[in-house]
Length: 187
Image (tube, rainbow, N blue to C red):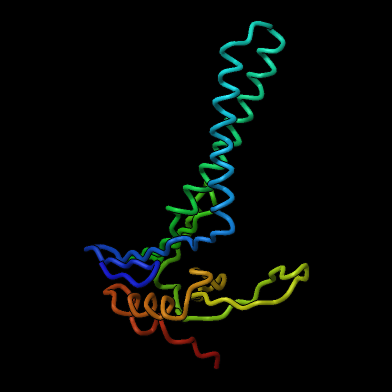
């Protein structure tokens, strides 16, 4: 297994797997941890009220609050789990390239036949970000490849060294050929 920063690569007999850990932002996870602690205290309070309540209407409303509190806690803790353990994966076999992107509680998987994959490269992607109340255009590094249907991008927000590492690992694999990395001539 080879590692560079938040990237890990391993080639097993029948496939190459590259994983990219989700970028952790302390401005997101520190408040979420604080919110989770407040949530735990609230859970103990609501549970105590449900267990010691004697009036039917009050019991039902507190039980309803407890239900919604549990849903809120599920969202908080699943988001924390995603931040600390979420990974984007790229799997290359002799037949296909599969991308797997974590989208909170869901992983979006797409498989592309290897015969259709071409022009694997490091590229820049333009996106909108809100800075000091204004929407501005910013660039981020991605890895892209072409298929007849569309351009596929993965690894958004990689550092240049990490993107180069992924490209080198893909090139070293036994599954991709040089023609996968060269642009298609348009003449």
